[in-house]
Length: 314
Ligand code: ZN
Image (cartoon, rainbow, N blue to C red; front, top):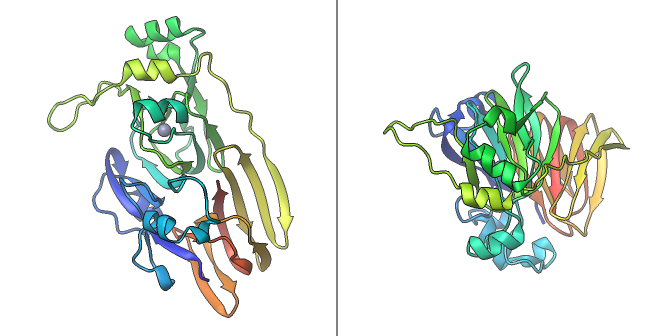
């Protein structure tokens, strides 16, 4: 059994930039690269296994054809999607539906609860997180009248911060932010406000106000941050969230550490530094920008080096 190293898929976005190349050394397709779909089985951009017996298979096929790697799960689709986002400009203000709404309105798609780990951001950066309306009527009215500065809640961010963004939360990343996002495997977004920006052809992007107002949680509920730190040998493990959709941790590796996992598959994204992963007689190089999955039954392994990884499981 080997780790499943994955090749990312890149997405052009009008708000994207070149940070994915500058920070992670990725071979990006153009200067407006906004998203790296790092661990994805979503049909809009599945990642491909880069090593071992499953080399060349996409993660969605692997999920269907080798369910034993994932503990023979009940779900039809691989439930998670890990991305790195380069918000070179403000993203549109948006909200995502929950599972039951998306099931009915979006042809059986999953809902989208997501979370963000701020890898880097410019000084004094902020983001939009929630709103100030006290009722649906007020939300509707403020949206229709374009009272954005009253309606939208801004919060300051800094590198190392973590935000849990449940479905129904109005949100937007703002200019100068590099984020690792762990989310449900869904591509359903309702756009609320796009700063009246026009594309090169002079067109506004479509808004989805009716659905957005329907799915937005009113009043806004601030997610309670739960953060605990544990030590395992020379690795500090920070627990950011353990929710019904996913659990997310940060592993700060500072030398040799031994682990053993059998019952749960784990997603890893190296966001800083480098190291090695040893498993039986094999060694694998870990470098900033590397993404991999350890399948169910992987067992004992050792990590060495100096690196930071975001780790998650459903
Ligand atoms: Zn979102």
